[in-house]
Image 1 (tube, helix red, strand yellow):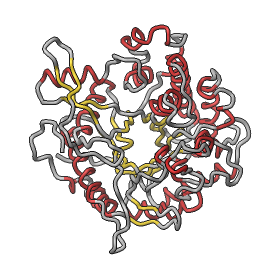
Image 2: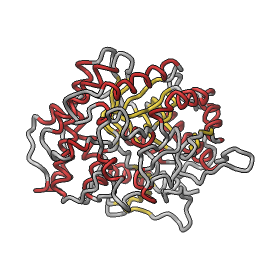
Image 3: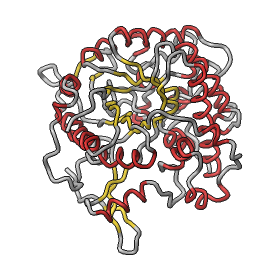
Image 4: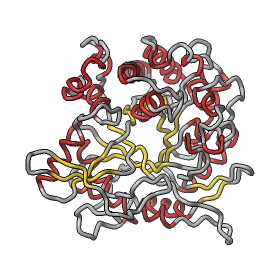
Length: 462
């Protein structure tokens, strides 16, 4: 068992979560700038106004990435930093920041993987209806054109959008994320359709305007289920359930991935959602369904499934007292076996794990270091399962730890720490955690440091 020779080892972050500089150099407001100023919407009313101050400290941060040995850094671009109104006049100081960041990464032999949209939607376009506006796909295409024209001579790896399940569902139905709306299901599906069209148009822009051959994917949530046993019945039932829609929810794989890759909405979703589905033209899928080079998936945890005698299936609760992260997400290493396997079987695209990691209780110890053995154990177990998936035939091309550094964790503010690098938000001091040093060894050995799965391969909790 081993990782492929050309396997990419990286880490990730998002613009609003790390950059700060919320009002610097002509940047426009985003919906997260808007929501963060609403009392009570984030933990202790934290905001991303300063965050890790990556906007001013990117050279130091890139040097730390190089110290860890990262081969790639997945970053996102702040749309309103580049286009303060969302469209129209370019903010040269804003786009120059990404010019310099890309150059710095390349100078340190770190490949930039750029996500066009990781949730910081321009406030000015939100005031015009945001994703509900039928012009929003064209707005996104214009933005993609600006970025492609400026960066594609050096950037070759692209993702259009990060987790539509979250920025549409959590942001527009639950109101938990920006823009903080609680809309009815027809509006959720309309916003989703426009976001899918935006994805397709952005891919078209990148294919037509990139100055170097682009490698393009997206980064949806990999909503993962695992079989409770390795019986064929449980495996088949889990696969079916992972790609089925049986309730009116935004938390699915197929409502987003099927249009992008297979060129249609899933039949079961159309039947269940009924009149809530927006009117669309069949030609819309000629736009949405563009050739992709990889399936990026953000995968952290999973639920267990058991086949029933009648041909159905059920979710099997974990035993009391399961291992959980500080996000209360259950630790299920087999997520990175069954998730990539099922996605690869269905969509026939190489898999890149675009996010995986854990929030932990981290602080600077008396010896001046940050010891995070739980994170090391988490990453170790999950990477063993990804290695197992590769050994069983899954074409997995890369893995990105979430996240490169502690940062603003959306509604959780600065309560949760996901980083390989510890950040003191007052002093802006950075410190490599033990997990960063461990990951450095993993990268240097191309994963041979991981070892193999030695325990029984039946799914279990830890």
